Length: 347
Image 1: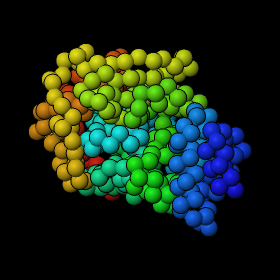
Image 2 (image 1 turned 30 degrees about the vertical axis):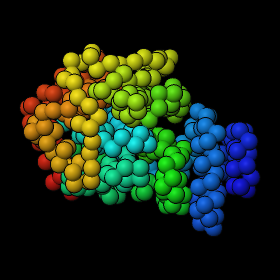
Image 3 (image 1 turned 180 degrees about the horizontal axis):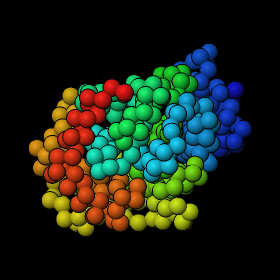
């Protein structure tokens, strides 16, 4: 059946809701070969995933996920996740993970959902592990960490066991430079179901459809961003060029806008200034940012994105105000203290 769906996609015909459910059932089966799964994912990507297909995949996979047992008081908080979909191939350091830690230091409850690297050298799980922050807590312990420390990492394989039968196909696609629908799905599958999300995508034309998907999944406050960096794009708010934005708040209509770095009075720099490397390299970059030792472009990129995250979660009235709050969090030592607290925590 999966080859039949692949042939349909190759002809430019999208998947119905029932076909989406069938496709997922087939993708998670052990007896279907990796290449067959990879070819389906390639065909879907070549056709172009519609918002309805992405939302359909997200709903089915969310229904299959392990649910963390959050207590009522934690559930009633505004809970933030911030992440990029990956796939921009710009090899920047772990900006979103840095932002998540800054937001937590600012008093925001942050449920970071992620995995090890697939399209980069260092994924969020890799760099957090290098920083000494637990990444493989049970759902019960991760929920307790979120309650007690305002930050917890929810390691995707612990919550989406079906993914172990899809990972090899994703890697096969990635080896040839082919992104898949799972690049979009990762940020949509946080098992905590956060109320606020900042998501970066690697192409501007993805902002609106991903915002539509996020809104349809019940997120109260959301922002999807794609920033220009020279001739390419970043799955972040860009400190190098214009950023395309699609956002929504509560039940208000989705709005489109753009941001330019000049609005934030950032010193000029280039993409090479934001390049990261291995998990060890990126962990040291994060330590330097949170401790205040880094004062250059990497800091400015992190602050700009932290400003957006704090705005999305309702901590401030503008991105500029959020940037100022993030700056104070670092200068006061709160960011370094939060990192120290989290790296020592063993719930």
